[in-house]
Length: 361
Image (tube, rainbow, N blue to C red; front, side):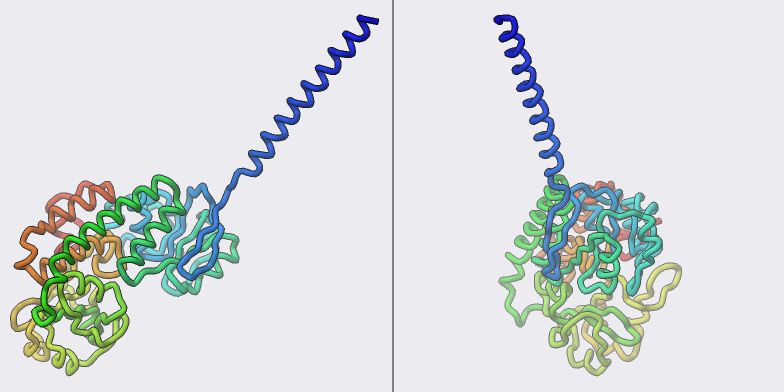
């Protein structure tokens, strides 16, 4: 009887042990199954988008955002892009992995067959991109982004960092801190300049027809930060066509030609004489005083919806108010920026090429 009881006791213990073990295994499996694989973010449209937590392959249909990805340590994850080496030679120089990406987007369409072949985990698009719904219909999360001022630029970096993970989030915070520091140091000086002493600045994007950038743009924002007044401020938006009569009426003190200004090219360089020797422009103060400049152009346009707005405000401050910003060494700042945020050792010669709106060798 005792042997029988003992045997029953042992069998009972075994059953309990097995049940407990199975319970632990089931619990572990349940935990593994419940581990989140995605997160929900809110994009620039206000729409909730479910995106993967582990992102290895990225499509980017917004030209400016390809540089943002490179700065956040995800440049090697870009598998589909809107860019080419010809259109953005400096970005391909500092991030050679771009050469492996397929150009599947353009301003108006997306090659869905080629996009599918690249197997992206996520696609970033500019705001109100016609292709966003088409991409979502393929089962690929499409995140729309946008910014028209410095706060928007910072939010774009933060959102992208949050999507990409801890390392990218830290990089985004570092960039925002750098941008804030430069904005504060410049505006601490320019905010004290009386309005009547601020030069009128005209930002030109085409000479034939004449198109300019007005208010409600990032261009207007950096002109203001740098201590200037946008001569075209009464016009709202980008690339607005205006007449020569209107230019003469505004009579800007400084003209900045956008790095993508449509104009003649000779020996691989844009010819500023096209403007300086034009009879129609000779009565404009900026032309008479030879205060006409090409805007720098790096991994992306400094002047237009770019991470390099952080450099643009420093360059523009020195151009618009040179006497107040003699301490800014824009070559040194450019080299430090590329080393810090793009992990690229820019030579002094390369930095000067970027500042002078010239392509890499």
